[in-house]
Image (tube, rainbow, N blue to C red):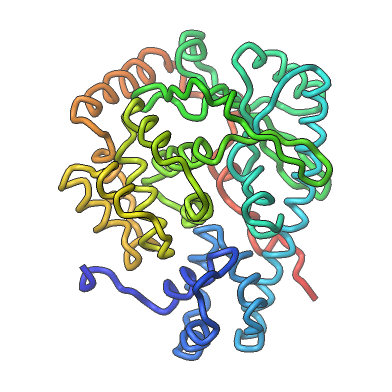
Amino acid sequence: MAGVFVNNTENKLILLLSRPAADGVKRGQIYELLTAGVNWEKLISAARRHEVTPLLYHNLCKFNLQKDIPPDTWRLIETSYYYNMRRNLLIWKELASVIKTLDNAGIPVIVLKGGILMEKFYGNLALRIINDIDILIEDIHINTTKDILLRLGYKECVRTRSSKYYENYQTEFVFQRLLPGKINFIMEIHKAISGARPHKIALPNLWNRKQENILYRQKIMSLSREDMFLHCALHLRRHIRRPVLKFIVDINLLISGSLDWGYIEKSANENHIRNTVYLSVYAAKELFGTYVPQNNVEDKFQPRILTKYLIRYFLNRNAFLTTKLWRGWLLRIFLFDRMLDIFVFLWKVCFLEKIICDKCLGGLSYISDSLRHRQEPLENIPMCK
């Protein structure tokens, strides 16, 4: 395996520095790599691709290694950190305002993924890059929530799809607004934590298990730690064709604390996502050395031999940062828990959903992937002096 993929200095540095607390990392490890000869253009490119540049800045400062970085490169890293801090502060302010408005209308809201992770688990708004904010709304409140966002100045980003598609398959609705500083802000309303791929995710006690958090004097509701982990695992599966290290950092933070693995096992079995859970735990363990009791992973979520081999072959620490698209497609196929699920997926998603219900592919104002999942180009960000 080691002969196929190159475990280079840049990859080693990114994996060491992409931890909010840098637990178990020693200054000498990083300094040794910095003095071994680094391709800084390659490192910055990979860090931006995996959305962990602010973490690099945070940990290089923590270990007082700024002077060991070329000045021009350091300015790029520093600029990315402070730009992300400013952007996230504006996003947080906007999120708090929206939640307050919805709360006044009697609509309960659960904040998903980055919106809650960046403060509750990262402990610093600047450390996690946020491409959009996801909120979970009960189905009966979806239309009212959409009307409220429109009154607040948001524009809905829609595709011209059949009414049957919206009725049977639509689980998220995307809204867009321009914040001060010409920051493109995207808010996604979800009525489920994941679409049916191929099975609907059923977590019947999800709303009862929600947790209340007080962040910056604002009451914010979040998923329980276990449900948050399941949601992040499903999100990683959704993007496994081009996995991003940021998602593994999220999962690493969640499983580093106490989790009810019995609840996770029961939910994984009922929703046919055992392989997805195994993938998530293995990736955190392999890339960051996260401690996970062996019986929880090897015994409870053991995948088929071929699936286990592919996960370990494609997502090991030597290969993850350079994963190719075809590998991700192949791995996605083997993440189905049962062979039957592959055929159900092809029938429900590729045929019924995409061909029968989604007849019109042209968009009115559908948000593009380049806006949803890409950071601001460095040349458009004012450089730090």
